[in-house]
Image (cartoon, rainbow, N blue to C red; front, side):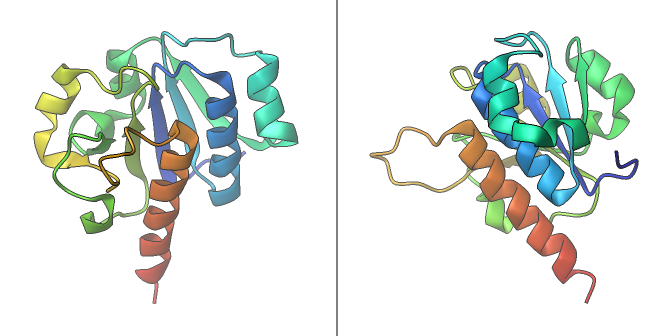
Length: 159
């Protein structure tokens, strides 16, 4: 397991185990650490989560924390330097300038992120542009889109 992750991917109160498993798989692919903020809508040993993550889960750097405050204690930059993904943001994820060790925070599948977090980080909100006919994207798809854009920018900065 890696000690210096290229990114931190935070799932705030995820509800669907297959999404978490798929996002964990993406994290293994890029070298990111996955953080899960409780309460979770499933057990960590859920078969659906493990199945979506296939045999990658043993290679995943991950941690589950009790709540937002616990995340901030474990990952102090989450208090002042996270990127929060929300469909209500005015700034597209492609306009952000991502850097190594950035923190990408995704809300639950049905509730998104709480207003208290969105308000506290109003200058760090990002969205994925989509047509109005599409209410939302699947959480694992959204995470993949943003994680790979961040990775592209981080690698482009090495040139």
